[in-house]
Image 1 (cartoon, rainbow, N blue to C red):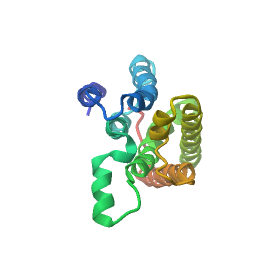
Image 2 (image 1 turned 180 degrees about the vertical axis):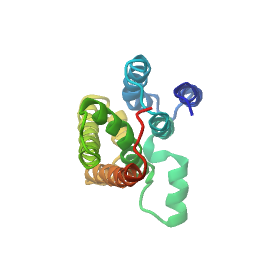
Image 3 (image 1 turned 135 degrees about the horizontal axis):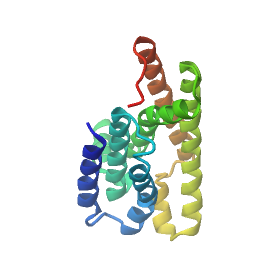
Length: 199
């Protein structure tokens, strides 16, 4: 799938879910990274083009995030159905998205590292990709905390989506690292069979 097709699909879904989100204030907070990340991808497309597979992976993550921002993560119906069906104590949609972030962003991050560090071996790129995803996850959790500390308490609580779990941030980061580790190992195994092309 081409980057243009990814952009069109994301734009259509984002516009549809921007209509009447469950909590407008939380929707705005959740979309702040989207308002920066998507234009940055478009603006830098000609100077730094990711592989089509990376654009697809980033689009999948953005779609998952867009669904979470529409409902607020703790109230996404899919997570609610699983919570009910499996007798879980909370809606785990946010945990799934953190796991997906790690899994889906290892390849794009790896491509950035590969191009900025010519000659780096596959194992080094694998390790640096996992570490970079972990750092991004930590940065996002810190951003969530800082944002919740300065905005309206109700919006901040919805934005954090801890659902009463004092270890929510740590579990989210662990899932992101776990997803990154799984994806990096798969990419490493693939690289041993066929070198990954940058485009």
